[in-house]
Amino acid sequence: MKGMTKKDAEYFRGKFISIAMPAYNEQDNIPIVVNDALKVLRSLTDKYEVLIVNDGSKDKTGKVLDELAKKDKHIRVIHFSRNKGVGFANYTIYKKVRGEILFWNASDNQIRMKEIYTMLPHIKNHDIVVGNRYKRKDSLMRRVVSRAFSTVILIRFGVPVRDVDSVKVFKTSVFKKININARNAFIESEILIKARRQKLKILEVPINHYPRIRGKASGLNMRIVVPQLTEFLKYFFGLR
Image (cartoon, rainbow, N blue to C red; front, side, top):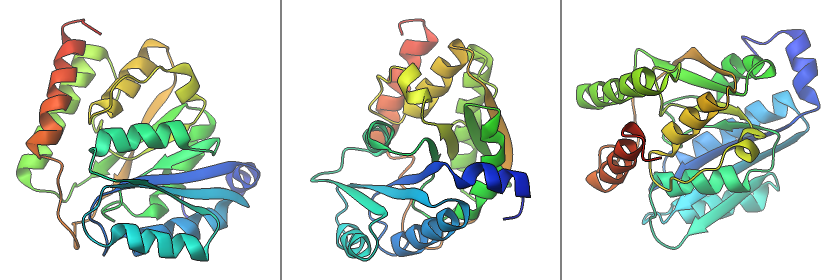
């Protein structure tokens, strides 16, 4: 458990920790990330869950998840009958998670589950820990758009984060203190903005990022970007 001290390990041993992720057409990645999630959780605590929201996948993601869940009672799957988008999937995660600590990750395996060892120790003294994707291995366009968006969030709202939509560790008590309105990809920004307004403690730490080997990214899909941008403009002009 590189990055964690013996004292850290003792502290988290008694905690209920969740790892959760949305999944859309990730049939090749999902067995890897779920098994990796189980592995790190077993090393941390005896009380844990892996929660996956299958966002209306058209491939075999749902079937693979059901097979995995039959083999391990710690795996919990929520299926959407149609694709509702990553924002709604994340909203469902934040409402349904059972642990007192949540590591929210993606299901594309670009951020390894072992990054929890880097981020988790900081949650003892913070409410939200954000992973800044060090040397991000995405296309230039995705990197530029992401950095520009995060910079505006930083300057306009004072959120001390440069990688807003990256993975996070939460104390799940945060979701009781914040009323989440967004059901689209702006949800990550909304949580950070409202956490900042309530003076919750936010910390960003560098993490490793890897190229996508399997599956296809959908982050710049206009069906995702347009609602996110619309909600952002409402906040930017003080309508939220």
